[in-house]
Image (cartoon, rainbow, N blue to C red):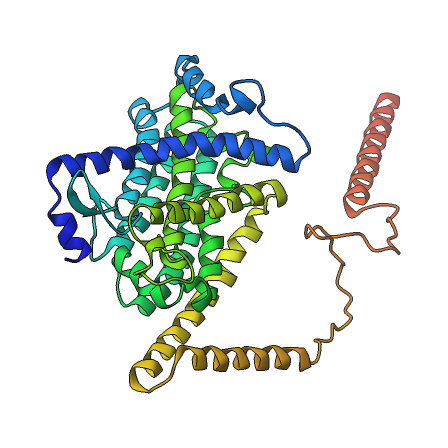
Length: 432
């Protein structure tokens, strides 16, 4: 039986168990990630991190989760209350839905019932995960607009522009995987990687996806929607208490989803490396460990970036998306389509294609190195600094006066002459 047939045969009680477990994956991993991020970043910055609540500070996130519901709830007078309350829910729920199509393992037996570790296997499962990760931006935009404050509104608008920009690049990277696997079902994509994982077969797609998933989740160095140095706190400036915690939950759940999706698309999903599907390492419950191990490596990459790189400027960030990632994704997509056409029509192996592609890349790099450097012609234009503000020339001479001052002086002199003539006329009239 196929994965879809096994899932269709699941009884109701098993579907409910899977749904409850998936609903708990996001919050549980959020707690783990918050503590892990604070400890790892603390280690990177030579400080201890949380070390008071629980052993080694491991219960700090649970203490925060208990504290936040009892915090005072402050609602701005200018807020649209219905949308203000609805926005955090819109940000969280789609993030949790995306986990439904992720295959966490192969066929197993749960209480005597044969099934697979997945909630649904759809022919378009890739689109479901992508939609679940992207709809959450509506919650951010509505939160910024409903707060009735300019800074959250700017943060929400930034988030909309950011997600649209990087979702295009992410979609192009995913299309490359779909073309190579010839399927949009997530389970079939994992099984198609039995002969080779896509992170090296489709390396440009993997790199584009990694960059796009950081921009998609509003994480540093791409956390422009909540840039506290510019926008106080961004889209959630006016939120407090449990609603603020829900935005936190949405952010970390989105991190889990895009990391699980990257594991599924590029890292072989639940498969152990260098062994076949019939290996004992790829049977039973062991593959769940391999899946979460790969996912935690990607989540560690999020933390590593946050502790290493400074925040991008907004124009740099948008330029990277539209002028680098999207064109590169389009060119790579054309190359993938060409390779698939060659493989379908001729007897060409993957190794031969990789060798030919490597030679072509080396030739292109050598040609770019041989191109002469562009000569910069001298002109008389005013030099500028890095922020595009004009700099005064070194031989600047300040004029002694300006045309306006000349006009004012001339007007003052004419006024004095008029007064002198008037006084002279009055004196002559008195003599008469």
